[in-house]
Image 1 (cartoon, rainbow, N blue to C red):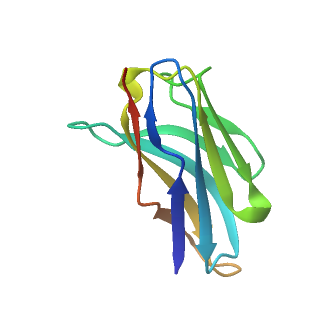
Image 2: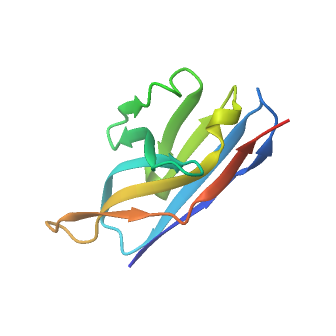
Length: 121
């Protein structure tokens, strides 16, 4: 089994910053893709940022220039730096990872439990 544990959410004022972390553990042979989604109240879950094992990244248009995704592959950990936060960024943020548990096996996506980010004055 694979577990993803997030941390770093909280309450922040508009214009503020937060840093989210997500550590994967368990039966892991390799991880190719890691990333973040978010879900605001009453809305569908939407992708925020993705990072491949080689380091290439992709961002939703709404967060480009404000959020930065990075990873520590040796520790199976992904980070999301959130800057210039807006009230519209308020959501539960979920990390995910595509994990291969054994050499040659298929990759499966695992999810974290979510961490609340609230942007409010």
